[in-house]
Length: 430
Image (cartoon, rainbow, N blue to C red; front, top):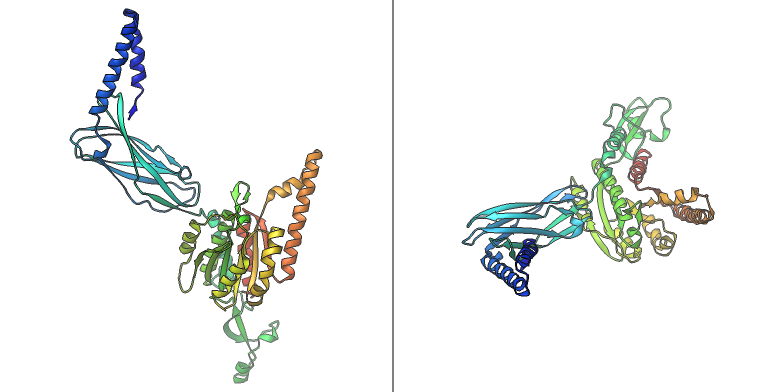
């Protein structure tokens, strides 16, 4: 049971009656009369149980975009129902205008639409639907909450998609689909042609030369159907926020751009995510479009406040196949985490694969190092310089082991990572 704002106003109206006939009996009589009206109105209110509420399925949406929750409310009672329906969601779903006034005749139904603007990835769920049926006098109402299951899957936003066309143009140059075909690079045989001055003598095809009267050389193009394996670290370091964005989300954005580019290049793209255990796994195989599968796998990933078990993750990488691959580890260049957990697992990966570590760099460290206005800022600048030096030293240790390192801010990391991938293609290393 609930009462409306009319009840206090009706009680205040009793001041007039008391003023005309001042006595305690008049005041009590007015209060009793108002209470009787409230109880009568409550008795005449239609039971919320006479309303059937059904939720329609909600399509998945990218974080930052808008979708809607649709409720169909049907009235199976004998009298008109007037009231309010509230469609409650968890706060991160961003539900707005979720209170709907209804007035339904017997047998009537209505579609109620609630806008959702999710601010977090994953499966966001509805809490409950509350139905409030108001009496004919508008003084009291019957109220009942019920579970109407519903959820919406929120996918990563993929802001770096805007960089894909320019990277595809560079890929077409390397792959020979542009007006100027790049020859002499890559590792996949393309064709034979006559030798000209300046050609690398190592590309001479002696068998073809023996069968003809002219010197013949082989031409090459970047090899297709190579493997790219993306490994996303979801351990405690991924929970840190860089410019108010979780490091995990920034790493996802970079991984998606690389996955889209590699997939268009004809390479096989696999995906692995985990911390102390494997949280998601996608095998590209012969699929023509693996990106939606990776996006779907990323949607439910959240940081886990625990150290990453790189031995287990490395074993999972090696179990995906013996074919040499570009293994991209999207993790933090945190000195302690790298030295204690990642470094012991790298030799097994480097022995079989080409390994690349991609990390989100915090621009606040550079900003702190540049501030020297007072004593407090000088101490902060010294701490920032120490952190940057440790980060540089960690990257150098990785490079000595044969691991490439891409360290860039969140907005630059997707571009830097794909540029490094294209550089490997251009040099015939992938």
